[in-house]
Each structure stands twice: as structure tokens, then as C-alpha cells.
Length: 487
Image 1: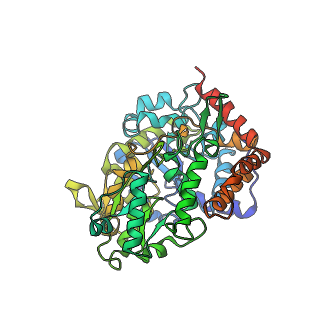
Image 2: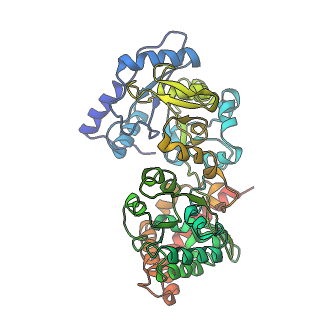
Image 3: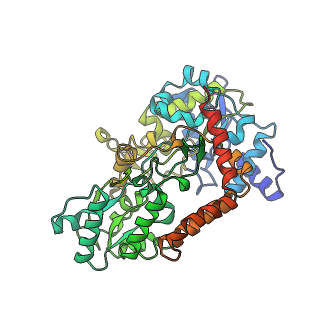
């Protein structure tokens, strides 16, 4: 990996980072330095006051046997990454950080197999076996602890209160969904179905294709190809375009719109997009939209389930090659995740000061908003975070859904990327026109769906993709697929 020389403003930021390091550890405690770029601290770059942070660090050190020191990233994402690269290329201590993709840092990190086996049982217990694939190289080396997890965020939602008013059941097939859309229009002429351009394929293309919104192996030539080239995609576009022509879609669904404002109209009868637009926005509008309720309604089409599971990506927590205490790093991660109380200490601070139990039996937490601690020691991971809930009625449904519907894969298709960790950096290098291919795809899909371009020109669109570099993309995917699946 190549590290860039930093400009003066970023160097000044790095000096500020160093001030976030906590006091000197006791002689018998291993010290680890965490560059906490996990996203939790993105709005708290100033860090916690040392007078507040010190006792929390002492508490964690006494409980875990490891004294964690934290560098708090400052500035924007680019500056944070530049500062990280400076640390990695210098003689300064840094033991662990979150790699957006471990591939990009493979030269400066170490395999974790033996460390996890010896010190990481709670980590291995928390993260399902199948989710380690994205962090494992072709030789079986585990290069990171997965930061994200497989989720199913794109299942269709239908207004339950309208179904009840009309005496209808929640739809399960595309034909039933169309009948519901028509009934909703009769019931409320302003009723609409909403989505976003980035959501519509993972939310519905699976109903018309074999593997959904995923790279796929073309058995006819043994090559791996992007999702847009699958048989059935044109039929899917035709269906989405038909619904647009029939007036079912909110008119700006495939351009830019304010999602909360759309929901505040109380006219959204079907949502085919990211789940939290339902679970987080609904509590904000339910007083204005009297009786509003939703049914999670997975839909099937001619080829099966509409939705596609969201892959993890190859990001994760890594241990640096220059770490003096790699075992202590894993010991600390393991401590955080082995018990919900430990997670709460890392996230909110000392019990009774930063947080208390509002309902211990049901693991509901009351947080002290005035504690002054900004969570330097937390290591977020969805499978850990769903173990408890924070007392907040507006987020209660959302929190409950994180551990139920979001992790239910029974009604969505599993993408190839769920088990094969493609190296995005290699693909970007091998496909100079990758950005143009993605832009062209989004632009033309919008034109086809809205009727601005005729579907009679679909083959011409595919030819345009080929001229923009599609064969380079196919070659890059196929090369990595062959490497990842070689026996």
C-alpha cells in the first residue's frame, strides 16, 4: 500500500489526535492503541474530556485486563484516512483500526486465525460462521473481524390500516400486489408507491432473475457478470415501467425527493425500499396520519422472491503488523462483545454514571445524556448492538426490527457477494470505466422506467455498456471468482 505525504492542516489534525491518548498504563497492563474510525465518533472529533475519560479507561482496564488508548479521528473522511495512513507509515503506535476493505491494507495487517482461536471465543460466537468469508483470503487467512453483517433491508411494506379498511390480506405475489395497488388508488386517489433509484433493484429484481441484485455466473460461457446483464432484467424493467405508467409510483421516486416529506403526506401505501424509512419515519408522522400501520410484505414474482440480501463488503476491524500486543487487541475486542454489560460500558461509560438499567430483565437501558463521554471505546457491530435497547419510544420499533426482520433472510435471495469477497480496489484498477458504467446504468434505467426511452432500445443500451467497458468488468469479476473458488 502507498501512503501519501500529508499537508500541513492534516498534520495539525494529527497533533490533535495525539492529545486524545489517555494516561500512561499501569506496569502490568498491556496497552493497545485504537484508531477508532468505526463511524461512532464521526460527530465527536473533539473527544471526551480527559477528566471524564480517565476513570472510564481505568474501569475498562480493570475489567478487561487491557488498557485501551484511543485516537479520535478528526476532520472529514478523507482527512481521517490520510491521518490513518500517516500513522501506519510512521514509527508511532497503532494496534487496530477499521479497514473499509481489508484488501486495501493487506500489506500492513496480520492474519487473525490463531489469535481468534486462543483469545476470541466470544467474537467467534457472536459472528456467524458464514459471515467470515468476506474477511478471509484465498489461503484461508482471516484478515479482519467483520464490521458489518448480512442484512435484508429491502423487503416490501404495505399499509396495514388501508388493507384492514378494504378487507384485504397483505399481498405475497406480484399479481396480488397489483390488485392492492389498484384498490388503494380507488380508496385514496392520491395513494402512491415509493422507492429510491438505489433501492429498486435490490428490492425487486429478484422476482424476475435467478440471483437478484448480484453478480452471477453465466453457465453458457463460464464468466461472472454484473447483475444488469442477467436474463430477466429487461422483463423486470418493463414491470417497474408499467407501474410508473399506471401512476402507482410517486412521480419523483427515481429522482431526488425528501423522504420524510413524502411520508408526511400520509399517501404512501406501499414502500419498496430501505427499511428504516418505515421504522424510523412512521413514529414521527403517526400523530398526523391517524391509525397508520404497516405490514412487512415479502413479494414473489415469476423467478421467486423480489428482495436481495444486502452483502457485507470486505470491511472489518484489523490488527496491524507493527502491533506490540496483538493478543491484547483480540482480548479487548472479545471482552467488549462477550457480555452486554461490557458493551454498555464501552458505549456509554461506567454503570450508574453513564447509564443505568431502565428494565434489566428486558435489557432496556437509560442513558445519561450529560455524562460527557462520546464512546471512544465502543466497537460497533449490529449483532452486538441488538442485544439491548435504549429507552426511546420513537426508536423502539426500529430497535426491535434490527434483530428480527433485518436479519431474516428467508424471504430474499442471497447474492454471490455474500460468500465471495471480491476485491473492489482490484476491480476499480482493472476497469477504468467502472464509474461511467454505473452512471450509465442508473441514468438509462431511469429513462426506461419513466418512459422517456422505449424498451425497444434495451439491446442498444446493453451495447452501450459494452462500449463503455463492460467486458473489462466481466473479466475482472471472472478472474477473482476463479481465484476465490479454486479448490
